[in-house]
Image (tube, rainbow, N blue to C red; front, side, top):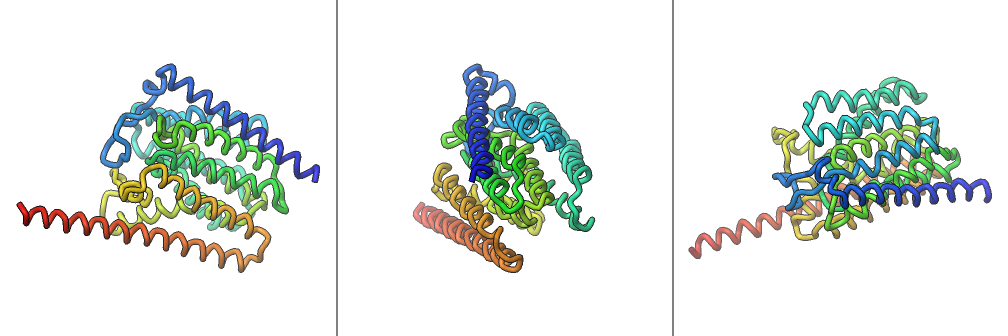
Length: 345
């Protein structure tokens, strides 16, 4: 009992300290006025908010994440370097804008460095597929940073789920658990300012490193035998599913997918009248259910694990279908009302 409780207590303590540090940094940036000078998000056709909002969440999360890996998880030094590098490039993008090829090159270098220096004992084609998925995870986190409390809360829940498995599984990885606990804590500190009504957003300087960390930590746990390959995907499945399905739909319609839009499921939920707070809470509950399922599955047979993963995917599809039906019904009602108003005039 002692050998298990000590790592867990350290993880809890690290999360609390990280939350305080991140919240303190962000509070200083807001009170001093530096937040608006560093990077400000102005509403556009993709936005769900109506007023300019600082994009400085990364300034609270990234320093804490890097410090935590240096102190508590020194074997993850390369991941810490990748986080710092991506944060620097993304902050420049937040301030001045960078060509897409420059941003993508930075994402590619960071992911390939981790996969090449720390290769998992799997066939090359599977390692290539993992690297591709990690690059996608880097980008989709940025895509999903568009509603009050959503990205911050999902980071808190997701990175909070990783230690639950890393510290209690049959192959415990204390450094992984401690590092992820600090990330969850830093996300909590950010969420204090990001929940509705949001005073700050992650911005590229926060969302890109968070996406990289979600993939890198998931890969690290897979490589160390802490969890199977499906585990990180199941933990962040609501994020992955929304961004992926929306992208595929736009590609099939021949649309320019890189242009701003408001077609994500979370955007539709807000626009349907759920609002930012209730939409965020609904997503937290779905993600938490997936994490509980993922941790419970670790002790089950491989066949049962994959069957359950498939069943969870079907649940997410069903949730998406309900949102789609509500969206179509809402638009049909609006169209009918416009026709009635036109006839009356």
